[in-house]
Structures are given as structure tokens and as C-alpha cells.
Image (cartoon, rainbow, N blue to C red):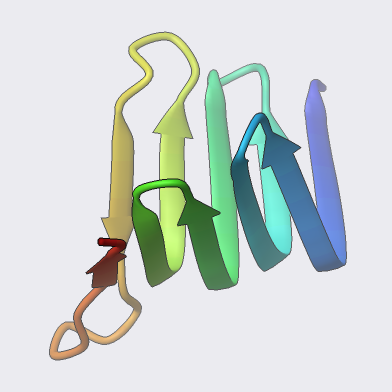
Length: 79
């Protein structure tokens, strides 16, 4: 299989952007990356906090969502 998992204090950096979380699963067979548990994104234009981020490697579509239906993804923009 083409599946890789990263656990505990995962940090992804690209240019001026960074993503931190507790878990990242990369599934090349299904062309999918799943970033889970305490996901925080920080970039030049702002920051995002969510429980889960799913990225399709083919379409590059990103889905961000919370575990609890009543909770909301937090998006903060910088001035």
C-alpha cells in the first residue's frame, strides 16, 4: 500500500505558510491527504483553525470541517 502516517506535533511548511496538527495521513492509493486533530494554518493573509482538513491530490480541492456539527471552523484575516 501507499499509505503514510505522521503523529504528534506534525508541522508542514511551504513558502510563508505553515500547518500544524497532531495527525497527518497520506493515502497515495486514494489520492488523499487527511490532516486531523487540532489543525492550525497560518499564512500571510490570516489563520484557520479546524479539526480536520481533507485534500484531494488530483483535484486539489480542500474540505475543512469540525468533528462536532455545532462547532465552526475559525478563520481570522490579517490587516
